[in-house]
Amino acid sequence: MKNTIEFSNKHILILGLAKSGLAAAKVLHGIGAIITVNDQKSYEENEAAKELEKMGIKVFCGGHPIEILDDHFDFIVKNPGIPYSNPLLVKAKEKGIPILTEVEIAYHITPADFIGITGSNGKTTTTTLIFEMLDKGAKSPLIAGNIGTVACEVAQKANKEDIIVTELSSFQLMGIKDFAPKIAVLLNIFDAHLDYHGTKEEYIKAKARIFKNQTENDYCVINVDDKDVIRAAEGSRGIKIPFSTTQQLETGAYIKDQAIYFNQEKIIDIKDIVLPGVHNLENILAAIAVAKLVSTSNNAIFEVLTTFTGVKHRLQYVTTINNRKFYNDSKATNILATKKAISAFEQPVVLLAGGLDRGNEFDDLVNELKRVKAMVLFGQTAKKLERAGKLAGIEILKNVDNVEAAVKVAYDLSNEGDVILLSPACASWDQHKTFEERGDIFINAVHKLK
Image (cartoon, rainbow, N blue to C red; front, side, top):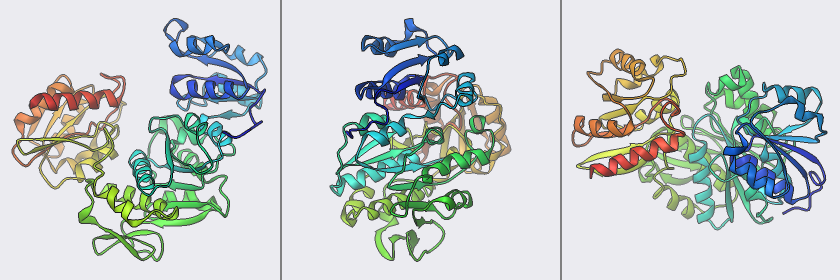
């Protein structure tokens, strides 16, 4: 860990615990910061707050009172999910207190280089692919961020020889000040999180912050098929490395003659790649571009792409039962993700969908649903999805109570050669705490069929 004075002896408010807040509090406390923690959850239910209190850290639970700012704070480190419209943060901004997310802490406490990956879809798959390629190529990678391990927790253990491969959300990027990845990747930009950002323009600005502090010695890996990505990258001083699924490029990663190339060098035939879905070619191209930039061998890249079948809950192959293939895409919490999942298969699809009602209709899904033979629906949005299914001309539409019941019904409706796909197009919070919980229930129900 760096001998940094950026946070030592500074008064820092950790706003919101969860995984990132807990890790940030421990790391900052360990380097001599004076920490106060404020969390929405009540003290009685808050095991993380109790743990920090035993370490001598001051904790306030049960809400976010503005009066807490009467103490002098040099920084606020906030949970990425807390919106900037929160009254405490509005007041902090008025007082000129810098508001950071823990990825900024991670950047300051490690000598390791960062590879940062962001985008509306495909972040986790791309991050994992890059990590696996570098790992196979003996490049000493570590993995961090939204993917499960908090960045500052990883950073405190990293050495100069390491590379930290980090998945980054727009929420996290809004809370950076100096963070500068050696390689920044922007996969795509679609309408997402507009309830948080307000407008697509603000969302694009948040994504563009991944390039904010790059220098001429850094790299900027961008999807040149996406006009919003190109626009977001205009401000980067890094060397631009393009990738495209539709254009044969002079440099960068692209497709030619049903094979993937980088800088005119053939890397792999598409037929040898086991990860399903045309949309995953975007992720693969980006990952190859990054891997080649850090001198990863073609053999290492080939080995990963011929064995990697997907990240859990993201178009994850589960098993085959009586020649029916089951896929868990519980992470598909919006229409776009489900559209991409359906388009990944040429076989007939029995689709399991439904979940939290955010007030939207599903008309944008209708064209893809024309490729679906049957739908099994659950949750608050079941009736809305049933309407979309009827518009698509699907004759077999079944409503059930939950995901577990949907698995048995979907199997009964299927034939040999079909794909049974959980891709809900909705968040899980009407019936489950997380999309992971929903996906695990699906996987368990599938294995029960055996």
